[in-house]
Length: 234
Ligand code: DC
Image (cartoon, rainbow, N blue to C red):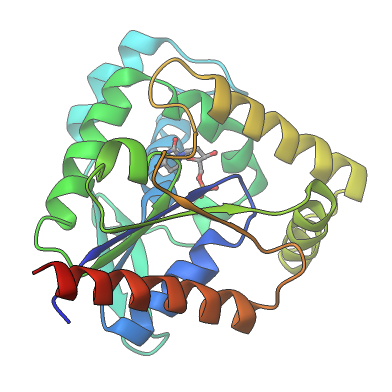
């Protein structure tokens, strides 16, 4: 089977990255976590005092973009790709609550998106990539052979995120987690540029009632069917 592009979009805490990683490992594809790139820019802006408690001057953010280099490197021991910001591994630092709270505002800036979409398109130019995010099937790879759109109930998503945060020592109540997810969804869906939306040709997977294995098997079935139909068409 020739290497295709798999775009996975969806709401926050819908299990996109878990699925994307499992598919990339299984297919021997490259996995790109596009959200990590928006998070890394957010971290850089905080570290440089340009973003403080959600406040920033847009022109300063745009100016700073020239000084931001984001890459992924594969960690052989951990068997996963990690995010590097200007040469420094920031994989842990970008997953904090402070970043989650502020990243949506930064990702709504047109110049931020232009910069990252260009890099993402280069990363996937040769095919053989699984990329997850919010605009992968609509903007980054509108011609992706397989587009999945992940959804899950608000309660399930909040519960998953709550457990994740507690593992990291961030002690929010379930109600606070619910609010934070709802706020991020709202911002991501209602921004002017490339809002989160399902591509017309994306296949929706509701994983509220699915285990990780079931979700993986369902996605793989969709991919196999698509690959077979492409072969027949050729
Ligand atoms: O997938 P994530 O939760 O790590 O993404 C963090 C934020 O980055 C998300 O709230 C919106 C933004 N994002 C985006 O605007 N476009 C993408 N392709 C990926 C993420």
